[in-house]
Length: 161
Image 1 (cartoon, rainbow, N blue to C red):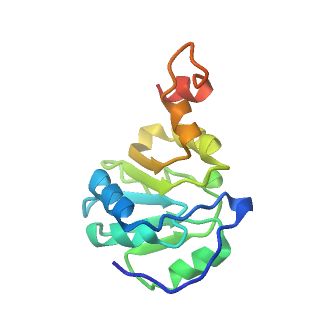
Image 2 (image 1 turned 90 degrees about the horizontal axis):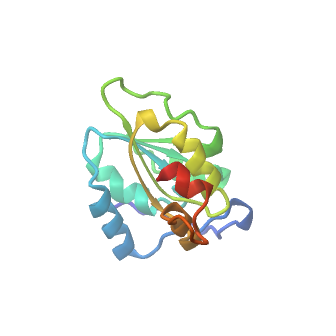
């Protein structure tokens, strides 16, 4: 796994939190089961922990990173299998570059401040998405699986359920 030496503190305005525990990264990769031919898009790659763990398994990975400093950091890897889009994932057109016969796979460690709006944005592209694998803040995950007549149940539960 490639690792770039880069000191970067999490920026609160972007809701950043970075995965640093290698056992968590390994578990995520096993759960995602990336395949060479997958059309894989990572949201919020941050320092690249999941990015560089996934790259050996896929022919190409697209990463969407809003933070200019982190996008530049990831670009320094010069990995031909990695394309960095420095923009807001809430504005990204997830049908862009979709193969008619193959849906995209979306992964990421989502910033807590955009998790819910981003999930709604992604739902508008559901016909183009094969699956999504995210690390989420506990409260967002509870709302995703919220049952009727519970405090966690709401618009997100209805839309996803």
